Image (cartoon, rainbow, N blue to C red; front, side):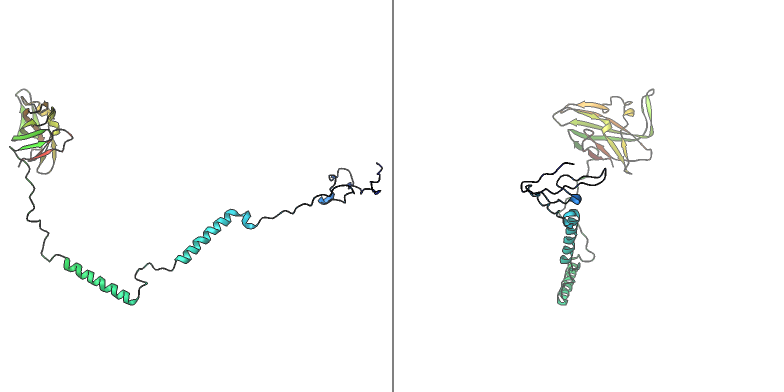
Length: 265
C-alpha cells in the first residue's frame, strides 16, 4: 500500500472508491458508484454538470399519426360547414315561389301543345324538293373513275357456253352481260371482270365467273389494259341460281373505286 502525502494546503486528498472483492467493477477515476462523482481534491477543476435529457412530446414522436389526424379533422370540418343543403332545388323556396314555378311549368306545357302539328298533318317533303335521279340503265353511259361503261345487252337462262368440244355448264344459269368500256382518263388503266358484281332481285350479290368467260371467243374483259381514249368490248359472265332474276350491276374501274350502279330492270 502506497503512502499518501499531503497536498499543497497540507490536507490529505480523499480516498478513491475501491470496490471490495475480486472481480468486481471498478469505476473510472473520478466517478463513483451509481454514476455520482465523489468529492474532488483541492487543486482539481470541477466536473461540468450533466444536462438533463429532454423528452420529446407525443406529437413529435408520432408525426405520421399527427398528420393523418389533421387531415381527418379538416375533412370533418369541411363536411360540417358545407352540409345542410338540400338536393332538391325547389325545396328551399317559399310557397309563393313554388306556385310561380308550377304556373310557369303549366304555361310551358301549354305552349308545347300549341306548337305541335295538328292531327292528321304529316311531314311532307317540300314541293320544290328534286327527286333523286334514276340509275342509268341498259344503253346509258355510266362513269366510274377513268372508265365509261355502256351495257348493250343482257342474256339470261344460258345453261352452257363454249364450243362443241370445249365448253362449261352453269351451276344455276349463266347471265351474259355485253358491254363496252372506254378509258376517259389520261393514263392507261387495267380492266378486270373480277372487279364487277351483279345483284339479283332478292339483294344477293354475285361475282363474275372468270373461268366460264374463257370459253367465249374473243372475250377481252377477263384482264385487259385500256389506253386513254380506247374502247374495249366484251362479255362478263355471271353464274347465278336458276330461279334468280338480275336486278343491278355494280361496275368499277378498280377494286378500290366507289363503283357505279346500272339498273337491269
